[in-house]
Image 1 (cartoon, rainbow, N blue to C red):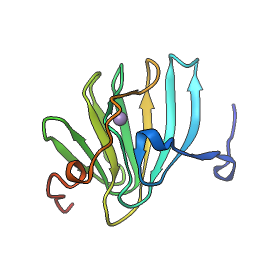
Image 2 (tube, rainbow, N blue to C red):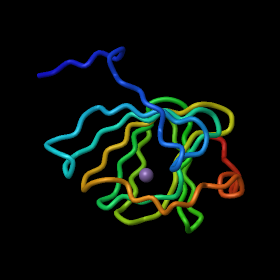
Image 3 (cartoon, rainbow, N blue to C red):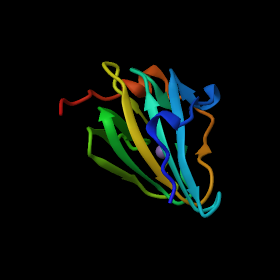
Image 4 (cartoon, protein in one colour):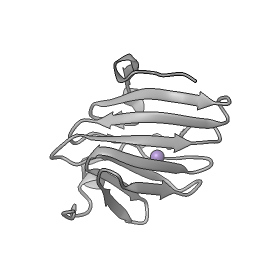
Length: 135
Ligand code: MN
């Protein structure tokens, strides 16, 4: 077994090319290899979000803290709080991020290799495209 204390997690700034605002990533582990399970903790500062992307085998998000938004091209918009799970099927283009009002941290679980980025940022219009309902 391996114990990785919280203070030993290596938080790294997410690549600017694929995110808007400040986002921090910490790998929790990859097993058994790059094509297997990738577990990441992701911290979004207020207003920060991913660019548009999809995952070859889908994604499970588990919100740890704050309120998150997950939205797809069809206008579906999910607001999720601590303890909530959001599952995105393989190939569905989407984005996720914090609300404008506060930070959000989620766990991301994926298999099947790296995220596929469309190269498009989530514009302010995309981001605010729907009213953010209260939880
Ligand atoms: Mn995703």
